[in-house]
Length: 94
Image 1 (cartoon, one colour):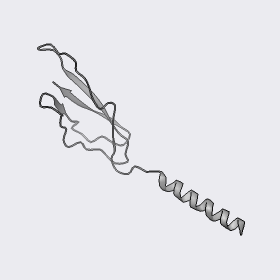
Image 2: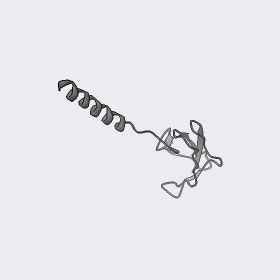
Image 3: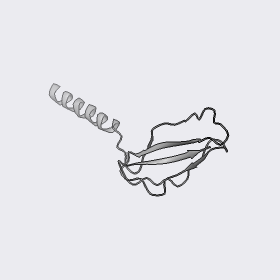
Image 4: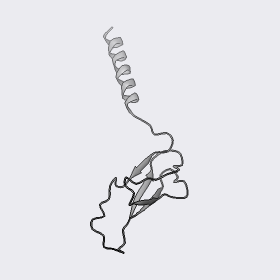
């Protein structure tokens, strides 16, 4: 009886452990940074920044739209899909 209860307990614990692991299916995005501080930019100065995007998913990542949090920054998305495990860049210009 003790072996039966111990065996059921181990099976139950193992099943919870397997469910706790999340597998990423489909595209998934990871950025090298969330925010960039341009600081003070002189008139006519170069105000560009690049965000590195990594596809950590299992399917191609298609970025269809990029939007800045303010109207003074213009982001440019990658033209091609980013394949799983590959990197792309989003260029942002002030």
